[in-house]
Length: 297
Image 1: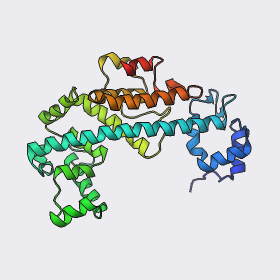
Image 2: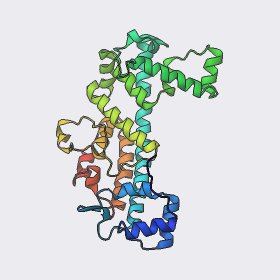
Image 3: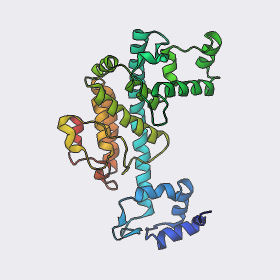
Image 4: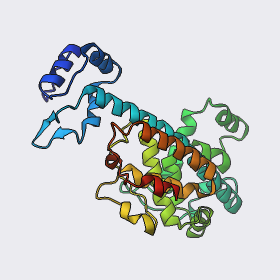
């Protein structure tokens, strides 16, 4: 058995943060209230980049628990803004795919692997069979949801694509798009005035961002796995480590035909950033100094 660290009381946590990690505690009672609402393990993620370069256990001079908590609240608001806009993009993407598959292959054509260019996963399971398996599992999980129950009782468990698409996760939706016939993918790409290869990279980056938001993860100063393809004029904003700004550019690309949605998102994002300029580091999210000009162009 490995030797895990000893559990600490809130008072002991404050002592350790102050004495061992050199974190400024301005108000001990307030610090305990912060730790009661957000455990330090979560808060510590906002300390990345704020430690002494020669001693990773010590915070730089002047860094306080209040600052970490403020960064946490900024990130929480950032997630709320992002997830609502990603939701719009996801639902529209679902609609496009459902319509194309329904009109090209019929109500249940999506269940026929020959209508796709299937791929084999590392576990030797095909992408298509994996998608259908997850769909069946979701049907079982939601069997008492009215629309699921209706199709089980009235149609013997047969679900047309315009119904089943609502049970797909965003990730499975992206996987379905990735194995569609090239002509079908190109048709969807044209709706976004881009190539299907560019579009799938944008969607995958949004799947990751959406999952981080849905699970209350950290976006501020986070290293992301999915790097969206960027237009030639924006390629200079690609960095060694994937950050949030390219994902926001991908959202801008996708929303070109929905300027009201983009403008609403941008205005909320801009206000949030400007309200927190005293505590955040824009480079930690991959934002260039002229981010407003880029997102407004």
